[in-house]
Each structure stands twice: as structure tokens, then as C-alpha cells.
Amino acid sequence: MSLTLTGQKKGMTQVFDEQGRVVVCTVIQVDPNPVVQIKNAEKDGYQAIQLAGVPLTKSRARNKTKPIKGHFGKAGVEPHLRLKESRVVDAGQYQVGQLLDLSLFDGVQFVDVQAVSKGKGFQGVMKLHGFAGGPAAHGSGFHRHAGSTGQRSTPGRCFPNGKRASRMGGDLKTVQNLKVVAVKGNLLLVKGAVPGSRNAVVTVRSAVKKTAKKK
Picture 1 (spheres, rainbow, N blue to C red):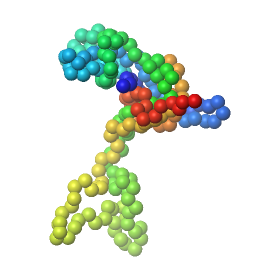
Picture 2: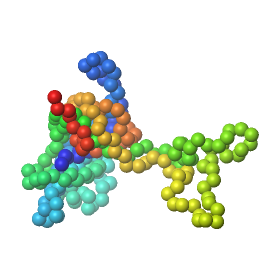
Picture 3: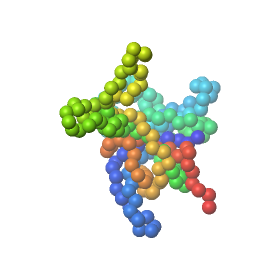
Picture 4: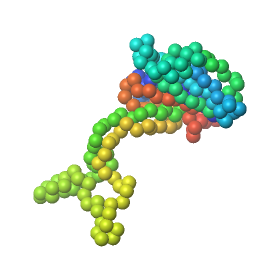
């Protein structure tokens, strides 16, 4: 089981590898995540730790509700934007208020990054599902339409879950097996793109499916 840290996507950049090739990277800022709560098998039925991510300014922290302020205050931690729970084998080795940072990824070559993708509003079937559309000439009248969707007398209805024009984006997405390019302080550089816009909240954990190749 690997711990999940919460940070923010800061944008994209490029670096050069050892062969002088350009590597396009996403920069993720991961400030130290304090432990807010420890869950054990006796009380909660499982072992896990709850980590807080993305520190808030004083003005934004004032807007938190009293239950949330009390939850952070009980742990002696300043309010943060997100709480993330990670299952662990032995929760007893952690303490409330303990800070966990990017040193957890020392020696890790691949990570999984999760975030909410950019919202693109209501879109038609061509942009959303890649439909080809109808003929673009001779007055067909359905250039960018979905086309016929109904049936005849049997079954006489439209089946659910068909592809229709609808909202696009704004979904929780996970990109797996991103290569770790560099770790510089509280900045994590991963190869390629991750979901979300700039300053979007992202969670990072060691890759579940891919590990470093043994030499």
C-alpha cells in the first residue's frame, strides 16, 4: 500500500535528459502533508491515515465550517483545502501532526496522478464522441447531428446509455505510469500531461501497475 499526497498542478515545462533530448513535463507542487487523523482496526475496522493537502491562506481558512475547523484543531493542524485517506499496513508508526513530503517518492520511477479534468461545457456528439457527422453538401440538413436514434415498432424505444450530446469534461481522471523526471524540494516533475487546469488539486501516489525495471 502506498501513501497518496495532495498537491497542485502548476503548469508545464521542458527539461533535457542525459542524451540532450527535450522532455515535456508537468510541474506539481506538493507541500508537506500533515497527518490529521489515524484510523485503526479496533475503532474503525481498518487501518489508515488521513492527510491534509494544499495549505489555505488565513482569509480562505476563515470560510471553513466549524466542524472542519474543529477537525483540524483537534489535530493541531491549520486548515487545508483537501483531506485524503490512505490505507496503511501499520497505522501505529504515524503520529497526528506528522509531516509527509516528497521524500516518500525517493527511488520511485513511476507515479499515478489523479485530478478533475477541464470542464468544456455542453458539447455535441462530434466533439464529445468523435462522430463523423452527415454529408456536408446537397442540403442534407444534418451536418453535425447524431442521426437517427429510434427503432420501429419493436422495441419502439431508445435504449439507455446511448451516445448523446451532453456535458463534457469535469470528470475525475487518473493518469497511470507517469515517469518521474525530477524531485526538487516541494516540486515534482513528471513526464507528460496530467488532468486539470493550472492550480488544480491533484493527488499523487506510487504507480500501482508499473515499477522500476530490475537491472
